[in-house]
Length: 181
Image (cartoon, rainbow, N blue to C red; front, side):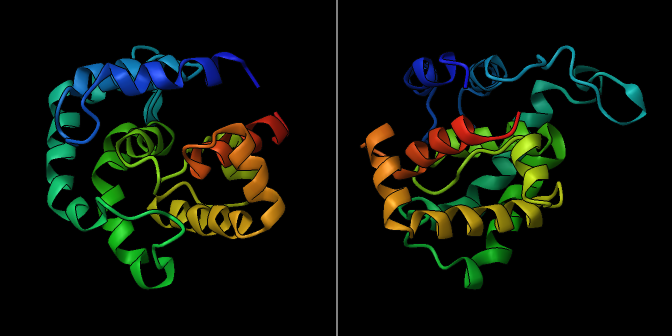
């Protein structure tokens, strides 16, 4: 795992107002894409078009704004507390606008920084290793897998050692250290 993935986490949190989903969107994009192998200026979309030519900052802001009312019931919950079987559809509704604009990898980071005790992050490697669909439904399945892994005491202990303030972040670090790419 790239050590900057650990060293820059707190800096990204401090970069923007993550509590308000549609605030500081430009700063959030800088933070999110600083962790990605391709910047938003070079990321390719279908038909080989650059993402920055397809979606504007206003598109991202609008998607975040559309998400705010659906996100409110989730503001004070954790992944460990949330019933993903009952709430899968609710999570998919929350994810859909930003997944549609940013793609699932960047959107997972946006949601993680906004609600770090609820949303894990993922990337294509983790998604493909788990054989999950690149969609809100696939991400909910990833959340379920992630939650199940944290129920194992050994995993929870490893997560707490890596990041004591947040088991989601701690387990994310452990998973990134152990992934196949």
